[in-house]
Image 1: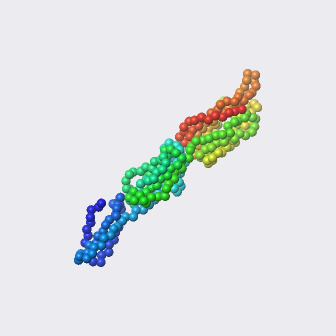
Image 2: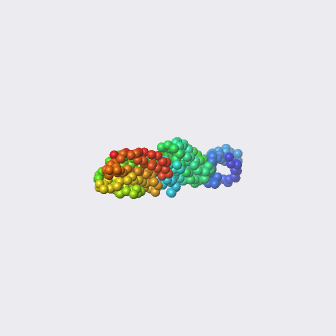
Image 3: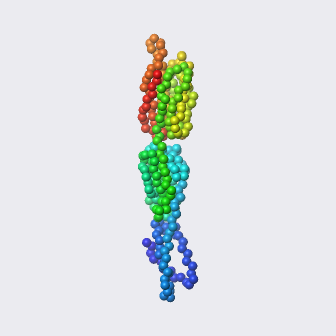
Length: 279
């Protein structure tokens, strides 16, 4: 769409065509006509800009929460509100996003800037894909980027704890990144167990192990265990464990009760409840 340009050339002139980077945005092919000054046949040819496939890099420190990652074309965005990473795309001719599949957003300024930062944000679902293309020639696109969105809920099982004077109880905890277990307080009673394995690492089902002490003379009251995400100091779940009760006669007994895990999601937290039984 540029204005025609006319130049007079001497005999045996060598023509050199070069790119004007400042004017590449949306550039199209140009037609060049060489007119013979003495009335001979003219020569007509075209010059077409060849735009590159964009290069894309991860913006260090842009991952929120910090567990989000990008390795090659694989992006991990945990399922929490505002979960995102940023990527930087570079190409003469500008860049744009195309072929988005899944509930994510990939946003940047709508211009022909050579370098541009895109924010990739999870909205819903478990997976998504997208490409970054050259804005001046969308055929020139990157390999597809794949977004994996792991759930952030923490599940627990093996929640039947039998009162005893010794022995271990495994509490199976499944979490995305591992947890650390701590007792908040003993509720004005005696310490009646130790947490012999107080943390898990990595994803999948792992055990927090409770080892009961010799509790013949112990006053066992309900206590709360906090399971904390190891990578961020956010309480993920509070676990209440029951205790022995005393009848008026002085007899000690174990009272089955409904106890609650106050469940927080991995990083930001939505509260739900699951129950354990004691016998």
